[in-house]
Image 1: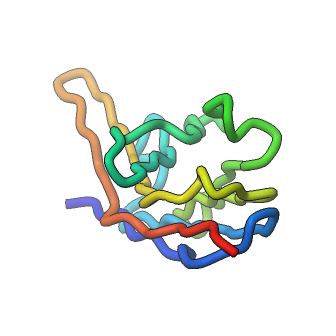
Image 2: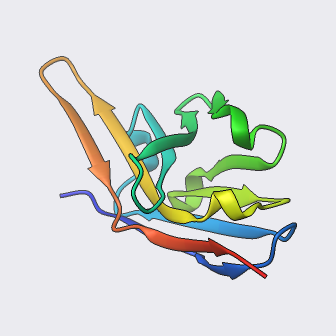
Length: 119
């Protein structure tokens, strides 16, 4: 079973920066795409950013220009660089991997890491 392990969450002041990491227990080429989702208290989980196996990125509108998703294939790790953070970025951030083959589709999730933006 492939596992995703997030790290890097914590408390950051508004306007500050934070980098989240997601290490996969298998090659990240296992996944058609990987990404980050977040869930704020009392809200539904939402997509933050996705990166395809080919390196194509997609961002949720509210984080465009502030967050950057990237991948290190040699380390089987995906990153989320968060700059100019805002209180509304406070949430549990989840790493996600999606695999699609001829006979199945599968979603993989990390355990989540808390990001709190507060002064």
